[in-house]
Each structure stands twice: as structure tokens, then as C-alpha cells.
Length: 475
Image (cartoon, rainbow, N blue to C red):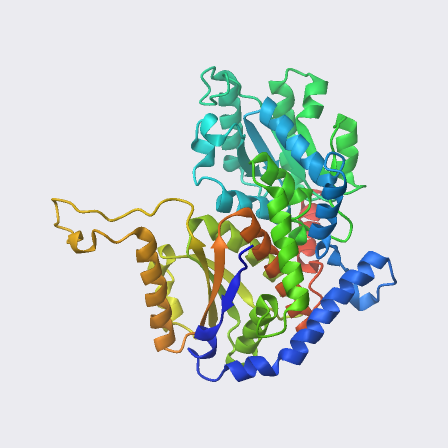
């Protein structure tokens, strides 16, 4: 498996005041933070007593890929992965559209996987071009009246249009995957009630079909678990204990939507497991996770680079950046500390934020997320008899070559004025590479939390808005 690579030279030589020696001096602290991160996972898995300052301790995500892979190898049909694959196949055979309801970590990982690994216009393709996989939509992540109503319009139109645009024998059937550990988050709960009513009407009150078309992913107890049992859902997937929402992408939270889309969830888990092995064994200077944490920490403490820009050089990775924004902000944005994460898509956003990043306040570390291998054949500019645009001299150049020149030119421009950059090289936008990337960023976030003395688990600030909103609504 090709591994993610991290090249921080633009940060260590392109910015005054930091060097590779500075990163080397952090080695002992980084190894200590790694040891604490792994000890947390061992403490959680052993069921030992957890001290107050460690609460909550949601370290169960670390070994989750290995646990799921081992179960699948032992008994493919009865394992969690086996049940995920079977449910995805059942939906493929019965519906053409699936609505995923969830907010925050309950949907952002799945959305990132869809955008990164699927055809950019998956939902617009004919069913055969989608290999029979359903269209996938995301809701319950806001309370936007018009957006939700628009999706209902689309679903209802699919029911009544015999030609359907569904290319599934006129079938306009749809299903719901609802994801919430507690079921108490109002955005998702409210949307679920609305979509559940619409689905029931479309099925003309057939309770058995309704139960089969609703697939909950939730905790063992809670409002959604109770409601799911009331509906009679035959398949209820569990959010594992010890796995917080933003760390849940390798549970059914992320795996079920990915499998519905036809992604190889086993390869996704293998990529994450590969990153775990690398994280545990490689020393600082050769360890992608530790070096990534060390550079970010150095730039923040020595140069006050408190804004971390993830510059993704592929439109398909924008949702990955948004997933990471939430991960970093909720994990480390506490005690009046924590870097500000910001995702940009280049070259698109060079025309909106590039000026600020190059000549604005020098408080940013820019990490380029670069795909090394494209899925599609390279497109050329091409020769034209109409050369008013004067592009014939570039006729043989491909879009990947232009992208590479843009990356190099942008890094040079930033480094010429002392703006630090680093490169995170993704082998491809496939399941194994994305598995590595997600696990790497989750591990890095926890390691940094332990390095600076902030508990990376829990999100007390988010809970405050929920409580206030519910109190206002019930006055």
C-alpha cells in the first residue's frame, strides 16, 4: 500500500525563525504524547478507572479498524462489516435514492468519502452508470426550510414520474439512513420526523415496508433507539461505545453510507490500520502523524501561526477539508486555545483568498493536500484554429501538468515572502488512501491535544447552544 507522505520543508525553510532542528528538539515531547494517546486507548479498552481530567475518553476509535477487520476475517456474514455490506446490497436492490440524516460527525465523513471516491456527478448519472448504486443525499444537518423542502420535492417527483429519471424500471423508491448516537439532536430529529412522514405516505401506510426502509445508526439507548424499535426496524446499527461522533467514520456511521455507494469499506479499514501501524512504530522525523503535529505546534508557538489552512488541490477533497475543520475545531478549540482551521480549494480559491494568504496577516500555516494519481486520463489543452486566446503554445500541456505548475508557483510565491507551507501527498483518491488520511488526521488531533494539555474528546461548547435552543423553543 502506498503511504501518505508529509513534506514540511516549505514550513521549515520558507518561514524565518524555524528550522528542522527545532522540529527535532520536539521529538521527546512528541513521543510522550504518542505514548499517552496509545495508553488512553489501552485504558479505555481494558475498562480501567478513568480520572476526571480524562473524561470523556473516547479513545475507542484508535483500534476500531483492526477490530472490525478481525471480526470480518473470522466471520464475514455475521460481522459488523458483513451486516453493513448486506444492508447496502439490500438497499441497492430495492431503492434508487437514500437520504442520510445526521449532523456534524454523523454525516461529514460519509459526505467526504462520497465526494472524494465517487464520480463527481454520481447523483446525476443513470442507474446503470452508477452500477446500480442508489443516489445519496444528505439532510438533517441544518434547519434550512427551503433546502429540506426541495429534497422532498425531488423524492416525491421520483415517486410520480414513471420514467423517473431513475433508470430503475420507473422505480422511485427511497429509504432513510438516520444517524444520531442519542437521537436528541434537534436538527436531525426534526428532519427525521418530517422525512419519516413523507416516506410513510409514499408507502401508503405499509408499516412493514416502512420499517425496512429506515436504517438507524445510534446508541444502545436513547430517543432514536426507542423510536427505531417502535417503528420495528429490523436492522439497527450501533455507534460503538468510546467512539465520539467526529471520530466515528470507521464505524457504521461512515461505513454504511460508503457501502451503499459501492465503496470498498474493507480497503478503507485496511488503510486506517496501516496508518495505525505506521503511527505506532515510526520515529519522529519519519512519522507522518508526529511530524505533522510537530510542525503545526512549532509554527503556532514560535510564529503565532494560529490559522491552519488546509489547501486542497482537488474539488473532490473539499468535504474532506470540512470534515477536518470540524475535527480540529471541536477537539482543540477549548480553554480559549486552539488553532483556527480553514479549508480552501485551489486553484479556485486563489482568486478569493490567495491575496490575503500571501500579503495579509502572517498568521497562517498552509498545508497543501495534493493527489498524486488521478483516476481519469489527463485532458490536454489541445490545438485550435482559433488562437485568439494564445493557448496553442500550451496545446500539449495537460490539466494535471497545469495543476502541478500552479502548486509549485503558489508555494514559491508564499515562501518568497516568508509564508510557511507544507505538502501532504495523497497517493490517490481511493479507499485505502482515504482510510490512511482520515486515521492520520484523527490521530494527529489527539496527539496535539495531549501535547498541549487539552482533552481532545468532548465538545462542551456545542452542548451549550443545544440547551439554549431547546429552552427557547419550549418557553
